[in-house]
Amino acid sequence: MIVLVINSGSSSLKYQLFNMQDRSVMAKGICECIGTGGRMTHKRPGMENYTVEVPLPTHDDAIELLLKVLTDREYGVIKDISEIGAVGHRIAHGGEKYKKSAIIDSRAIKELEELNPINPLHGPPIIKGIKACLNRMPDTPQVGVFDTSYYSDLPDYRYIYPLPYELYTEKKIRRYGFHGTSHRYVAAQAARYMGRELSELKIITCHLGNGSSVTATAYGKAVDTSMGFTPQEGAVMGTRSGSIDPSIIPFLMKTDNLTPEQVEEIINKKSGLLGISGISNDAREVNNAADNGNYRAQLALKILGNSVKKLIGAYVAEMNGLDALVFTAGIGENDFVVRRLVCEEMDYLGIAIDEEKNRFTIKGKEGEISAPGARVRTFVIPTNEELMIALDTCALVR
Ligand code: AMP
Image 1 (tube, helix red, strand yellow):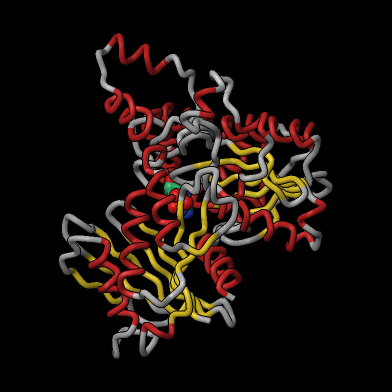
Image 2: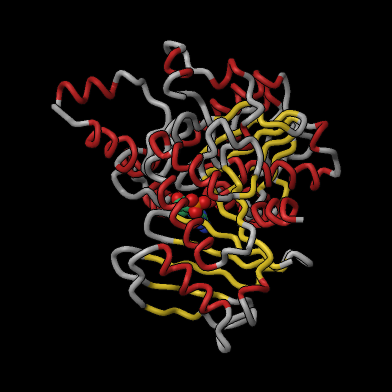
């Protein structure tokens, strides 16, 4: 079966076309500047990229263009869109309703629209992407794969916040967790690497990128995660603060007369690596500055590393043990300094990494970085959310 995977953002739409027979990527690309301009970059393995600038006023126009390019005589990889057996959509938020990947029909779209108030940034563009696909391919099954589903088995005492209980029952304020598809994928890959069953392992996965989250998986199920009601909680991120004392927010609003939007801008767009270093949200630039002796860049990396270390400690305590620690996403896969900062002085917990492997051998590829004899095995595993979405889509449609 050929599966098209769609990841819609507010102004961009990423896609990958999979041949599920051998799980190969037939083509992938991105439509950018939707609503403000329009550019598409289309890649096929072993071929030159195709880039085109055309107006893309809506997500529907982006889907129309990508289907045209996928079936183009020169740039395409299929003859007709009827060859696409199913479309898998990355959906950030499935609320409490979607505990598993699901077929998306008009009723499901309505249910997803009802989640927009608690998912105002990511919800609407995803729904636009799904509607555009249904418009252009009404007979092709559409599947939703939810970032939040992986956390549907969290125990209540880990997803209920210590706030008035009515805020949960009436406003649905609770920990939902995000990046679930990535954590699910790399936890399974770690078990495969170890030649063990996922159902017998305790694993902590650190998805460290522009957005960062840490998840504890015990015996095949997520049991805690650092992102909460929104993807703001937890570890330090590129521009997001992660967890802070909540009273800082009303303090700033009162003392500086800030609106909720202005505070949101500070904690979402001006904090994290960028806010501390004053240099960039890009870990590569922060690392370069740190190497050149910049104090705030060094501090930013230390605060990021420590925020992840604390979460690992908490999750080892919650799971009463740990078999494997996994690093993934842009920073987790590539940044040996952050991995070192996270793992140093963790031998009490059985975590120790081999400096040589961490620094030189395993970079942007799958591999083990544990020191010889370490009780906990530590891995770098590149994430592949798109493949996970394609696999779920294929399984559901079949
Ligand atoms: P992601 O959100 O997973 O795309 O990750 C983005 C983050 O990964 C940015 O902070 C990048 O600086 C970082 N990153 C990507 N490649 C590298 C690299 N080779 N070395 C260090 N950091 C990297």
